[in-house]
Length: 125
Image (cartoon, rainbow, N blue to C red; front, side):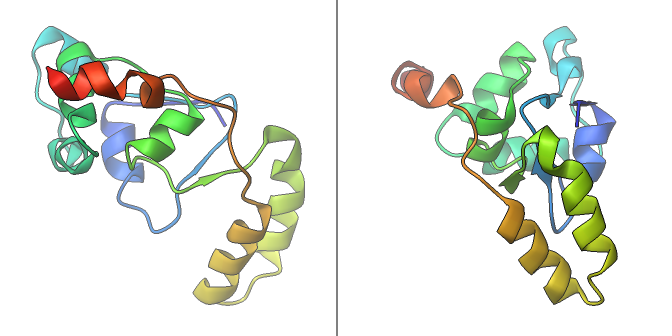
């Protein structure tokens, strides 16, 4: 429910369930100063649709929930206000299947992001 940057993206983005909230900011700022993302970050950026990964790699731009979902850096959006309820429901989940089902049941559409509207020029570059 906050900032995930650099190695934190690399570690968390390989998890089976990745949740973002309206307060989430996801970035690999090391790319902005010429460093290559570690912990599999380059793989994650390469897997982003179109040229979004290239854009993020070249700019070091941070993204919110909708853009993290669009780029494949997260799987589910859960509003911050629902996190205590989600935590309680997850504590009652006994299997990985139940955990996944629980997270899906709390998942909602995120507020609009910025990258989807900019795909034309990003992909054209």
